Amino acid sequence: GGYRGMSRIPARFDALKQTGRTALVPFITAGDPGPEHTVGLMHALVRGGADILEHGVPFSDPMADGPVIQRASERALEHHVSLHDVLDLVRRFRTNDRETPVVLMGYLNPLEVMGYAAFAEAAAEAGVDGVLTVDIPPEEAESFVPAVKARGIDPIFLLAPTSNRGRIERITAAASGFVYYVSLKGVTGAANLSPDSVREKLTEIRRCTELPVGVGFGIKDAATAAAMATFADAVVVGSALVSRIEAHLDDPQVALTEIGSLLGDMRAAMDAG
Image (cartoon, rainbow, N blue to C red; front, side, top):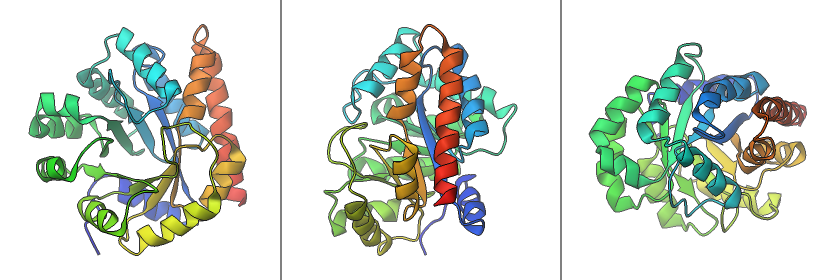
């Protein structure tokens, strides 16, 4: 069993399961290339085939992220995009989309500064469904997890190739919504994936949890997305999208179109597989 979550996330996975599809989860950094583009990008991602949106909270020292997403964080911070602003963008997205789950991905420090209970209340009120904190040690989780669960928000955790059985059990016990397997050692957007090693690890993770398991880090194109979709419950794509934004900073409209078509290609390849 285990706690399945109270947000929009479990229902979305259930609906996908009934049609035999894998969730497509795009990541962008909130406020990149500028806060005025974020809500439009979110809607474009949904039109492109996104099932769940993952939203990076800009942070000055994003250790787990590769250069592409680090630079996206820097661009957002140039516009002084704060955690409060990110919640406001989600709130604005919710005026037209009440259905699509939104997960915030970020680092513990800004949440700690706001206070876990205050953050959870503000996030729930804005329409956030899950929070993925990259750098949360299990000790901190003891105060963080109950605070967000009390507001119906799913705490989502990363598992890595290096996570041993004990660690997988500890993390999946605290998690809800889904868990996210980081399929590479190293930072986001790094080298190539080995589908076989990912499949083996997913088998091991599923022995510990009934939660859906997503795979991310290194999914650059439709072929890789389709390969992962054959055994993952969700495919997360980030750097490939953010690099499109970066390539068209002078014309964000072009980035929006390119992102939509990349997601469309991924969705089609995943569904064909």
